[in-house]
Length: 82
View 1: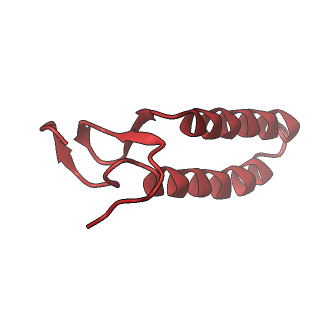
View 2: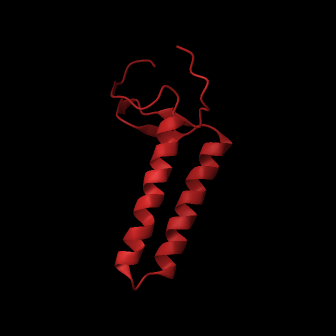
C-alpha cells in the first residue's frame, strides 16, 4: 500500500492519535488553530454557547486534518518502532 499523503505530524509512540508536528505545514496548522481559538475565545468571552458552537467545528476540522496527515495514520500504538 502506497502512502502518498502529506506527512505533517508524527504518530504517537503510545496510544492513539498524532504526536508533534514534523513539518512546517503541521506547525503552521497548529499555531493557526491555537490563534483562532484564542481569538474567538476573547471575542465571545461573555457568550459561552457561541464559543462552543464555533470551537467544536474548528476542533473537528483540525483533528480531521491531523488524522489525514499523520505519518502512518491514526491507530493504536504500543511503543514499538513504526
